[in-house]
Amino acid sequence: MTELVFIGLGLNDDKGITLKGLEETQSADAVFMETYTSRMPDFNMERFEAECGKKVQLITRRDLEEDSGKVVLQAAKAGKAVFLVPGDPFIATTHVTLRIDAEKMGIKTRIVHGISIVSAIVSLSGLHNYKFGKTVTVPFPDNFSETPYNVIAQNRKLGLHTLCLLDLRAAEDRYLSIKDALKQLQLVEEKKKLEAVTPVTVAVGIARAGSSKPTLKAGFVKDLVDWNFGEPPFSLIIPGDLHFMEIDALIAFAGAPGEFRRLAK
Image 1 (spheres, one colour):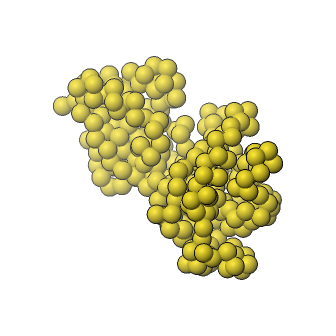
Image 2 (cartoon, one colour):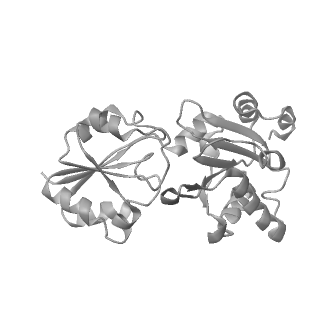
């Protein structure tokens, strides 16, 4: 049997994989894992390999993008290959090409889902899932783009929340901070003046979602730029219209100031 199984690892450590995902890994002929799309702070490779009974081969961005994932596809043509991905395998589109190529080669593909940042931030913050609009990634300043600001402005015009994923370069151990992301967005605000990300705009910063000690803080942008969120990974939410229950949740779970209550719509 030739097949390629994409398995989500969850958000923080080697214990975040589902039982189904672990079983699939234990029965694989070859196991691969990528670590460049997200940081898993407490992942212990030695412990994970002992648990699944397999040697895990780490895959780089170059292996997938420049070499078209040949090493993974060759293993899948020879037997059952597992590809371990932080979070849920296809919340981002990074690995869709690999799956398409496998299917074109006659290799069966399957997915074992994992905990995603998309669901985790909803659970942590208490914001309503159905009120989130388009998600966007805020890049590092050396790859500056106005797109994140434009998406936030469009979402807010519709009263929708925006999940901002913050850029990372795992190979360089670099992670865009919430402070720097907000500063970039404010630079575009100064130019476009759409009142999408002003000093008094509501924002929610999240660090280490999925861990036993995540940090969650809601406040105005002017306050969050100086807040210490600790270690990465980081995410940012720019809310749209807030229901009174969402405000109660932000006050209870994210330390939002009581003056948020006047923002209910």
